[in-house]
Length: 228
Image (cartoon, helix red, strand yellow):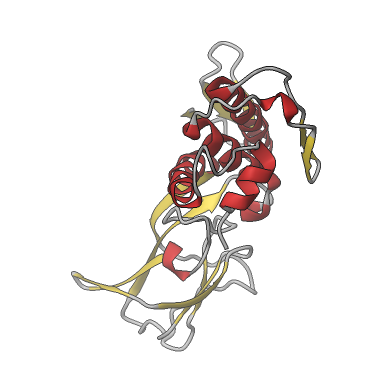
């Protein structure tokens, strides 16, 4: 299931089929989805599964097919607005040979990956994936709103949006701005949602924004830094 459909974009933003038909709007949504995913996900390459707890042992014993990643919820890797088996890459390593494993199913919320065949005891497992930085993962209403308003801004319509009433999706509401039209209006709405997303990411990742340099985020627990 994609983040949002053309019909939902029209309902939220007021974009009409005259300004962008469903075929064109679907392509725009695909592009907007990739842009938003770049903000709300983090990339992990070749993670070697480690013991997490008694429930998530991640043991390679020739029998177990189930492995758990250290970061979750699993995210949309291929930017199609859905999280499924195609969003996780698992490789089996033996000597200098890397073989792609087949993923039969996933539980994105729990970071669970089920392989078709259990790795042998002489193989290592490498997992490449993305995970959401938002606490509700792909079900976050902020994602739907962000893709909707970014899609509308890309359409760059000249419609008079003064007729748009107050719109509410879950706990997040967006009111109208009478008389403001086109790209500027839609991009402002997107930036408002983006600000909410950034605030939640900071909260979820337990980060502080440096007062000296707002582009540097400090991790409270370890005192490390990363650049935004």
